[in-house]
Length: 218
Image 1 (cartoon, helix red, strand yellow):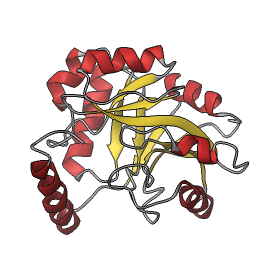
Image 2 (cartoon, one colour; image 1 turned 180 degrees about the vertical axis):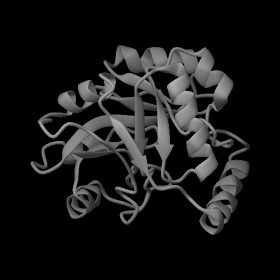
Image 3 (spheres, rainbow, N blue to C red; image 1 turned 30 degrees about the horizontal axis):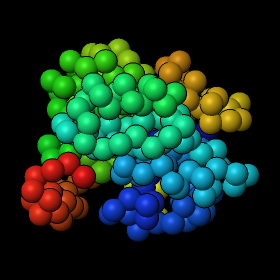
Image 4 (cartoon, rainbow, N blue to C red; image 1 turned 30 degrees about the vertical axis):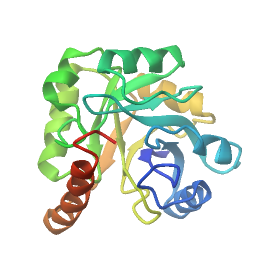
């Protein structure tokens, strides 16, 4: 089963996709499981959790003071603006798992040192919006840490959904099964990477927004 573990909807400040459009696109692309990980929002899960066609993992991409952290399997919204350890603790208190998101993305990633020095449950090893070298380094870092790995499209519009995913066992029925498989090291990461021209365009747009926010993580 293909599982895209990093997707945004219009509940994210920069998202353009409705939750139902995410489900529709997953069906088109043969994605059987998706983690909707909106920036600092947990609302989309309730819109589509009972869609009957695609397994939806409750998630969030949380903006800590040092960078983005993916939360999988949570039962409540995690507040933004906390320190790294506080964010990890809040995710655990919500019954979830904390993964370091795209660690080598310099305007929103945690960086190698933070990823190594804090007790993350896993690492996003591949992200379809990261450049190839960043994905290579993320995969090496994940293997060095020896924790479970994730991968996702980081889609903010419908078309890229499924550009990044993990392969999970086909006997998964619930989101709890999916999360257990990830934590049992059964996720095989697969992802495209963002190449030069797209990287320039994305970089100018994202870095400009970052500067406009006063260099604060979204």
